[in-house]
Length: 514
Image 1 (cartoon, rainbow, N blue to C red):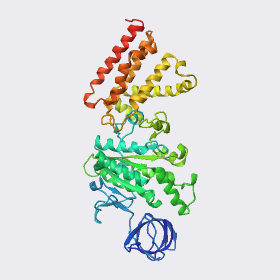
Image 2: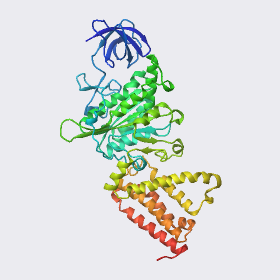
Image 3: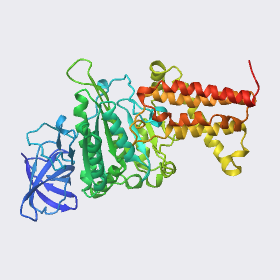
Image 4: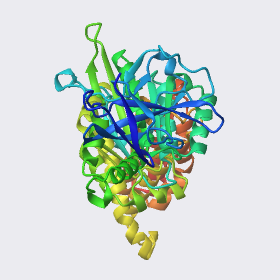
C-alpha cells in the first residue's frame, strides 16, 4: 500500500504528501490515518482524495472529525474508494457514510461483502424501456402525479410541510402493500428526527424491509456530501438481485449545502449562489443511477431503483439552483404547500403545481388494465380543481352567493374531491393505502354525483334543493374512504343511492321528464 504523511489540517480538509517515486492516489480513493483519542484509545479516520496539488501532494476531504490529527502523521492509501456493506443483512440496520453500524447492534465483520460507493450509472443498453406502474396507495400521487418503477422524483417543499412524513408513508406502503425494499438516506438529518424515524420504522414493522443511512447535521461536510452514495450502493445490490427498490434522499438541499461548503474549502471557483459549478452534474449523477435494468443471472430478470429526492428551497423559492437543477433530471414534481399543511391537509401536495411526465404512459396503462375511462375521470377532476381555483378569487371578493348555480356546484364538487378523495389519513388502517380499483370507485362516486346534479339543474331543480336532498348520500361519499377493500361492492349501493336521491329531488322541485 502507498503511504504518505499529513502536510496540513484545515478543518475538514487534510493535505497529504506522498513520495514522488510512489505516485499519488487516484481521485476518490479512500485514505486512512490512525489518531489517538482523549481516552488513550486509537481511532481510524477515513479521508477521500479530492484534488491533486502537485509534487506528490493531494488535498483530501475528511469523512470524520479531524480533531487530534497532526502534521507528520502516517496516512495509508487503501487503493480503492470508500466501500460499504451490502446484502440482505443490511435491512433493518442503520449505517453512517462509511458503512459502520450506528444502531448499537452487532457490527459487520471486516470480511463482510462490501461494494464501493463511486460507481457509474447503468449504461443505456442496460436500461429497459418498458414501463411498469408503481402504485403508492396515496391517492393524490396515483391520480395526479404518478410515477413508474425506476422513475426519478423531486419532492419539493419548505420546512414543516410534511416531506419526511410523506417519505415515511411511501416507505410503509412500499414495504407492507407492495413487498418492495426501501433505502432511506438522511442527509444532514437532525439526530432527533433520525431517532424518531428509526423507532417509527420499528413500531410499524417495516424496518425489516428498510435500510437506513445517516449523515447527521453535526458531522463534517464530507460525510453529508457522500451519504447519498452510500445509500445508492446498498440499493444497487438489491436491484441487481431483481428487487424493486425505492431510495429516498432527505434532503438533497442539505447535500448541496455540503457540496457548497466543501467547494469553498477546496478553494474552487463558486457558481450561482455560491454553489459549485458542477452542482447540476452531481445531482444528475444521483438520479441517473436509478432506473430499470436487466440484471445478471437469470434471463429476463429485472430490477429497479426509484429515486426520490426531497428538496427544501429557502423561503419556497423554486428558482434557486438546487430546485432548478433537480427539475432538469427529475420527471415528477411533487410540490408540497405550506397553506395546505397549515390546514392539516395530508398529504399537503398542491394538485395545481405538481405534475408527472409519466402521465401518458400511466393513463394508457390504467385505461387498458383498470377502467377504460380512467384518463377521462382524471382529466375531469383536474379541470374541476383548476376551475375552483379561478372561482376562488370571485368568492373572496363578493362571496359564494354571487356565483351562478352551476358554478356553486363546481365549487361543491371540487370540495368533495379535495376533502373526500385527495385528503388521506395516514394513521387509519383502511385509509392509509388505497388500491387502484378503490380509487376509481371513489372518484366515480364524486363524478356521478356531479353528473346527476347537473342533470337535475337542467330539469329545473335548484342548487339548494339538490344539497338538501342529498345530505345523507354525500355523507356516505365522504365516508367511503373508510370502506375496506374486501367490501368494495358497497360502492355500487352508494352510486345507486345517488341516482335515487337526485331523482327524488327532480320529482319534488324540478320538471318531470321522459
